[in-house]
Length: 83
Image 1 (tube, rainbow, N blue to C red):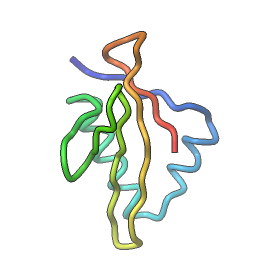
Image 2: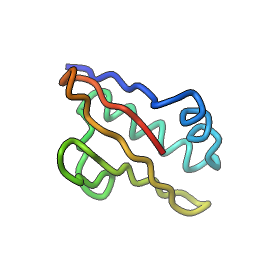
Image 3: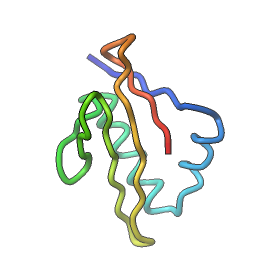
Image 4: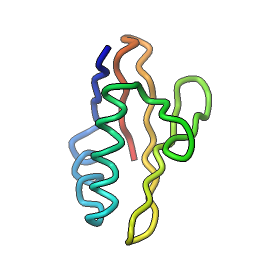
């Protein structure tokens, strides 16, 4: 089952896509996996905080970034991204 990713706002999506190149590339790779497998990719890619909240861990040449996602309670196949 494919998952759907929705962003909290257009500003959040723009901020994430404005990450430095290697971090943005890592984000794209990991979110493609999330679409196929769901929000919990496991270590070292994600950390579960409980109750459907996950931290997406990005690491690239420019450093690290963290993006938070939450599994939708309305649809088991959706997750929402906020930074």
